Image (cartoon, rainbow, N blue to C red; front, side, top):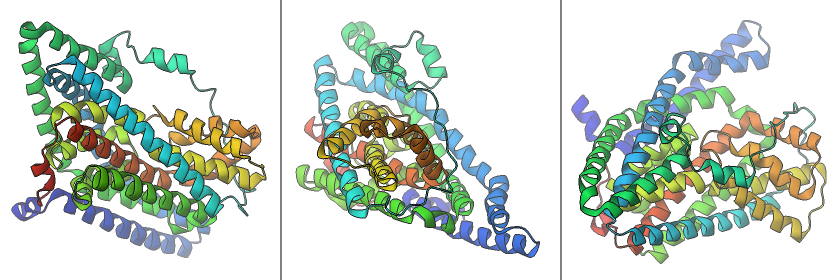
Length: 438
């Protein structure tokens, strides 16, 4: 049995678990709701029983999986990034690689903004939306200023930054340490070999954790399906449809064009190679938590050398939030349409620019982007009570849309890493094109 199980490619096991999770969640919700109604419970209370049961008995498996992969995030970023920089042999190459990656991330975010505003205009999800039943959700205090964000990148204590999971600060320190190893030349060779060895070990641990992915994905998807149910989406079905279609178009059109026509690589092979990362991103709604899987997929399935994967992907998990930028644009138009705000072309430009800026560095955790909405809505003077109502209306089902936009973010990270690797001569195209995917 075990031999047959491990003989199935991991991406196929994950896909099967995802489908079974949806089916199992719907079955549990149906059974528990029927039992609740038979016991005289209100329809709302009966509908919640399935999610409560799965939350008690099944979701802990998914939570354990999330903890396992989050356990790897900081050590994986630290060791692979230091090893990747040290492997470049020349500090100038790091600058070339970083500039290309940041340029591509910004370009794809620009396209995400345009697609989001286009779909928000075409679908007009806010027209006829009844926000009267929504419970106002007051947002926290003002977000940190740009200067505060930039200053926070420099850690006062690198060890404390690692303990707190401060990804940007860890990236900054790892880059400096890698450059220091390069500048030390012969004296730094021993340290460089240590980090290269440590990166190999962490990737092996990642393989061990990824074998639990089918069970974690099954548990998370089953709980999400039962907790929300299909009826929870009826009130904002048009908004959800606009978001999902916009994200799908962005993924196929922008990333597909980059991979197939600019790089000349097989598109199907690209998507098959990163399916594990997409599935984990979809089920966890966390690009940061998915990072270990993304690095493993891109390095082993797509042939991207570690010097690129170890530096471009952690950067992307922090600043590449195309799904968030697209989503914020659609939500801004949803709000304007729901409350009757008249928007000019200037407003559209401001929305696109602001959504792009606030999405950069957005926390890679579930539903983080919805709390950036207030900044975007401020571009056309939305009243605070309207912002609170919109957030209260969206928040209960935001997880469903967050799952899709996180999968798009991770896909963008992989596409940019592949592009940079090819342009830098760090892509094993034979490995990319081979048919078998682990």
